Amino acid sequence: MTVQVLGDAVTVRFFMPSAELSPYISTYYLTEVSSAGDLVIEDWLHPEWANLRIFNGNLCEAAIGPDPIRAARETIVTGPTSCAAHFRLGPTRVWGIGILPKGWARFTEMSAANMADRFCHPDDEPALGHFADLRALVFSGPADPAEEARRIDAYFRGLLTTRPPHEDEHRIRAAHGALMESEIGSVSELSEQLGISSRSLERLSLRAFGFSPKLLLRRQRFLRSLAQFMLDPSLSWIKTLDWQYVDQAHFVRDFKRFMGMSPSRYAALEHPVLRAAARARAAAAGEAVQALHRP
Image 1: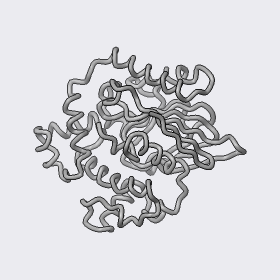
Image 2: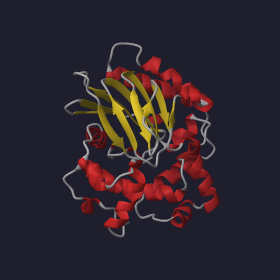
Image 3: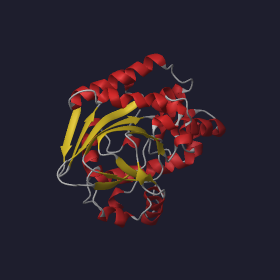
Image 4: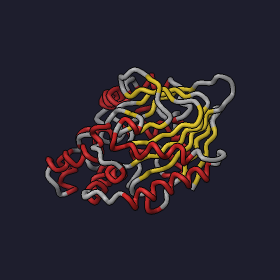
């Protein structure tokens, strides 16, 4: 399935992975920024699972959380995030691959916690070096989104044949599914749901998800609220709040923790990429943000 959303300067297309890759990859997505003039757009990306992005055209400047914005390279791997990613883009074509926790465990030998809230070129981390080959493969011919998506899918299907399943795949999938349930609001409830000790849950969470179970539950609660606003910016924040929030002040504290700014400041900013992507993603995959994608 392919969904395309056009903005004034931004085109976003989403492609779904083949069935055998769906437990590991959420979506493939192509963002194209218009080549008119010296256009530079910027946006603030919400917390999400890991992503791999490859650029053909102008490269990106980005920062995660309070880090200073810096130039990225032509291929970047971003670990799972708990902070907003501020980025700037000129005219470019950039492919993104959303890597789910089970995919991180399958396609890398690196703990997700070691890449949490940071990005790098694959060559900077031995456990990620194999991803450096993807850019040349994808951009090996004329620009053709459907064909490029097929090349990406073939590349990851190839990884399935060379990388055996992680020994905890069944637990990772179960934990991921439990995190999607809004009824679970505490680590003890999550541990009980999975039938494992809190210590085992902590180890699993850091290895595959990048953060402690407590922070993950807090992040999911926040993103359930943010996703509604992204799909309909006309809503007031109070109408988007997840039921687990005690009051609006509770939500504002979480917003500042995860986005580094107040809800009112975020709402006042332009979001040329994120709003287009939210609508396209919801239509293609059923959720406006990657971290709410069900395993």
